[in-house]
Length: 558
Image 1: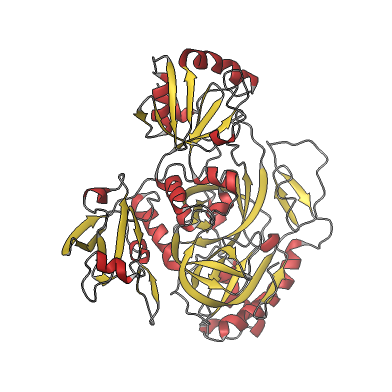
Image 2: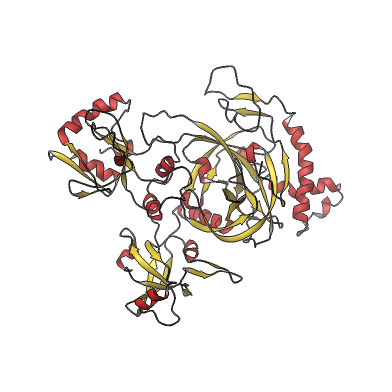
């Protein structure tokens, strides 16, 4: 259940006790399940019966009456829901139930088998699988939304509607890692019978009362809470910032992906992560709508455009004086422009961005938002789509210049392994090379990346850096495998040739005819291998460690 709070009003009800599960799925949820005595059988679905609860439908019906009454109390304070004239003769309880039934009809429980990659040792195709539960909700266009982290590394995803014993196979069609959002769909037409898509509402204000409806710990629950602040919310999984709200309640396992409603019955966001002091973050409905429109327009998620710059604020007076800023001028200082971004040809280090689309940027990097509040200037960019243009006013050498930039989708290299396939790797002489990515960093440093540098996060998101993930013990790597500095080291060049991607790295090594392979690392160390010996020993090392191939399928050169 959610953590206690003086403003919390909790209503929980069991949704199902008898339900069909493949291979004892989700026995770690709130249900107490009896293990099935027969051996696993992937070709049929078996019932798993809960041993301590009453019938699912009767139990849910009794609790649904209580939910209807409590939800009506929440919704009815600010909105008198319209009751058709022909229904005015119904009993009061039935009318309440009818009013809140659309909210139940928009919820789903997300059941997922996950198989995270092992970046330390790419052993074959088999990997252990772990079950998890989370929440989701229906939106228009036969789509279901949930948190990206809830279906990351999935091998199988199923959805379950309230008061139903049926599990429906779902497909993950898009993942927006920056805002922790995943779009799912179901091909079975029966799943869509009786569902009601949510309607999105405006951004809530501080102090406004909201209701989170989802499945914490596998049980349905409606939690009321209060908005503590509106701000740019930083995702703990990739440190990207998007508009959201913070509420005065902590969420637990199973709650991420839950829709959040205001008193007018509109969905104002999605619960996705907890933060300190028993609070949690809600991603705003406008961000969700941005992802959905992006997907509908392009047939895929293309990402949120951003400027490829490293910047600092200009609050220090001597810095402004040194850069000859005029009286009243404010802005941010560009420290570096990323070479793989289109603005690299336009913007320069020591440029000062004064405004974006005519909106002045403060010396602290913020812009006006609403009701006297200010937001980081990145908020303006998150409102843009791929292909949109942005007008920049730039101060360069005391001269104001104006530029119009076309925003493009900046490619994210392997931000999430959502298909369950093995991760990309290349092995030579016992050295395992892979791509620096968010999943890789999470495997090394944990799910929260708040303590890592922004530069490292940037590289994992927008660049394809090659790293040494593991040194397998072997004769060729002897003398290196005990050196910790090699693991996580980035490879910058091989025999003087810059490494641009893992595929180019593999091509350089495979085609090398020189006597030695010299790897230039990002640390003041050097790795050198005898080319012929290293290549000759690689097959034996793979066999020794039960690894089927020196390179993943996506790297194999035809």
